[in-house]
Length: 106
Image 1 (tube, helix red, strand yellow):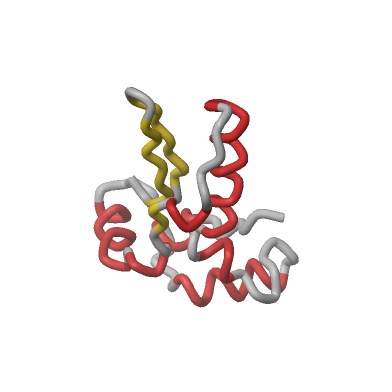
Image 2 (cartoon, one colour; image 1 turned 60 degrees about the vertical axis):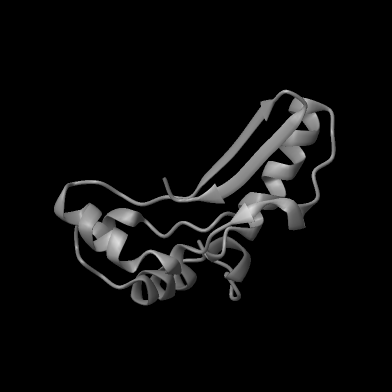
């Protein structure tokens, strides 16, 4: 199950990440230990599977650049002011035999 933090609750209502996470856990959207979702680890694992399917090669999870949503409190605050939302993106690019892969907010 993927973490459903409802960015609109953080961006439009100005609620804290911790508060929205607790609510998501109470409703069953988030795991009791949501570390893999929050840190982007679950997304990175899925990305490594997609790389295998799309490019026919194996990229170790430890070679993926992965950022934590908690690293972006100011970005969440500023995005709210401009009407945007912060989400994790899984990005993979194949160029001249090399794969660049990362998970982070845009």
